[in-house]
Length: 480
Image (cartoon, rainbow, N blue to C red; front, side):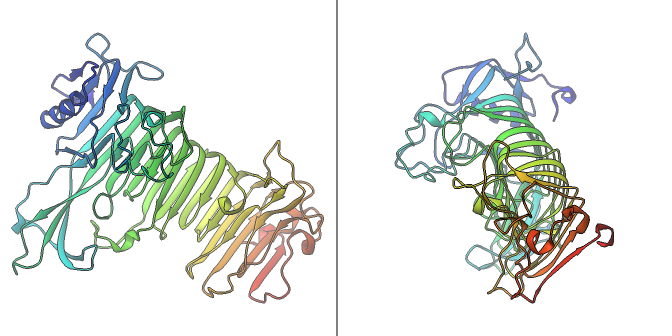
């Protein structure tokens, strides 16, 4: 519903002190199909717990502009969407949204719908159908989360973790009972497309700034397509949560040219087992290009994402687990210990990646921890990678690559291949500074030419009491 394609004039909303004018304008815009342009100044969200905004099939577009300036200004937008001061009550701090959008109830003839069997959250049978609603585009705005003026500092860190500033979710509505008169029915509806671009998020903390989640009950996909472009995060007032979060799983995700504090895709839900649109589950497809983040985490409960990322940068921590795909031409800083886990990767390739490993305070390099979990095999290849310690830090011991043998999970295994790789000087020369700890069950391949004459039993030692661990040091051209 781009403005250039619209045949009706936009709605121009002047700034005000009202906490309801923005909400009212959004409802008018989605009902009429008109673009909503916010004039320079501050526009307040409406306080309240579990406040959702239903968007009809015409969708919604929100941008910035004015009758005298009918186009977005360059740089940080003069139009600011702001959470009011002290609008999150300390007695009930969670689920206080800024703007939280869900699709409106679909219109349908129940007799012409194909209903599928399912189980609800308590295991009770029901029937469901999934519908696709309208699209949203939100662009050229500043989001002032204003979390430093909510009085949350004395509460537990996660007390307001679901009080996101900008949220998007599917919704389900009760439909008439099945013909047996006993089995309930649900009509799920998801957005066709959600695009957020040219947004600056400020004063975030305690909750995610922008969040894509399921609401009330999980489904797949939660949105057909999500596009995130040119998002920046500044002036964060606390360490908790992050900028962009996916607690649900869209069908397609495209993120490019962003500079944020934390990009997180994490859920304990197995999305292969929830109500879904297609008869056969297919993985969610993610494309990241030019994404920079202080911290990055992919941690869905099961392997439901195929990721293609290029020009990816992390400056503090990076974890990727239960994902298939490829990362190329990237610079990744990895934190120590548990902040550097790369588990249960499905035929994953790191191609031309520079790794910067952060030592502990005592100077120990814990390294990338590779492995598997849940009795599921992991397979990954490092091609033309550089492994080193974060510049400007000191170290005295440790390893660049780490692993632990899965003594209690016999199905855990790893196939790890390293070729055309460079390892920082000093590593691989003594038992205190080694290149790789080869302990996890499976097959480890190291190109002998990458060791430059180092003794493999010192550089990449294999534990002699682990017969189910195979270490191969051979010319890289012999590797698959």
